Amino acid sequence: MSSYDKAKGLFDAFKSGFEATPCDLDKCEQQLAQVKVQVLTGALSSKAAGPDAAKEQLLARDTLELACFLSIRRRDISGFERHVAQLKMYASGGSSGLEPSANQHPIQGLYLLHLLAADRIGEFHTELELIQFDDHENKYIKQPILLERFLMEGNYVKILEAQKDVPNANCSFFMERLLETVRQKVGASLERSYDHLPAEHAAKMLIVSDIAALQEFVVKENERKAAEETDDPMADMTPSLTRRAPTGLVKWEGKDGKL
Image (cartoon, rainbow, N blue to C red; front, top):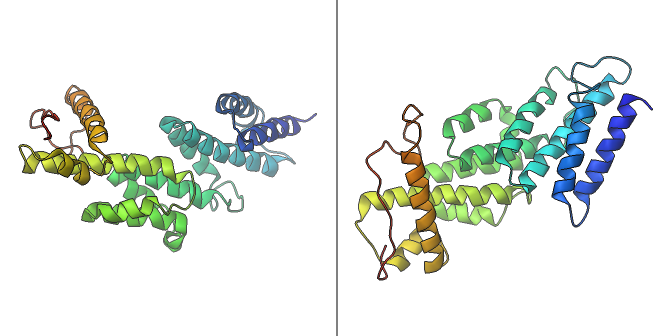
């Protein structure tokens, strides 16, 4: 059996496991590791040459694309970023010479959404510039572009509406994270505008369902800000949507029906 045939067999087993219902994510992660040994670090590297070179590169791309989706299911942000970075060498129009993949735009859109949810606006625009302008109308690319506009405008109602109309199920994870970014942005505004306000009013403004959810947000926000304040003082402190220039820790507290 050739190296390619062995790698293809491992990939097919990985894909079948990923598409199974229910999907055993831990087993898929183990299968992915086996495929990577053959496809990415073994005999079938991106520099491979020979009669199977084109098939080998296609298999490497298919492996990385499925790895991106597996990382999302596992809520593994670092894994998702790593696989997207590796996948770029196989993008259409690059040195790989491969035809465009049906997953190219969905993964590009997911990565843009990830950057937006992570409040990495500069990287969002840099990444967007690398995508052909004609592709900006693709539904997977257009959605994060619109969401970034809504975020800059403070039009959070539109962001909530967009959560109900995502291009595919993989977007839901990043939409949840984007809503957390929105809540942090609203929270920063509340800190500047109020000493306290009614808890029900605060819950509505922070887009949480009830007082219990508000209290959960308060705990997480206090923990996040405390961790941010103890970060490396040499780290990047450029103000962003959720990170302001340090002015001292403002602790949140829910008490007597007020925030």
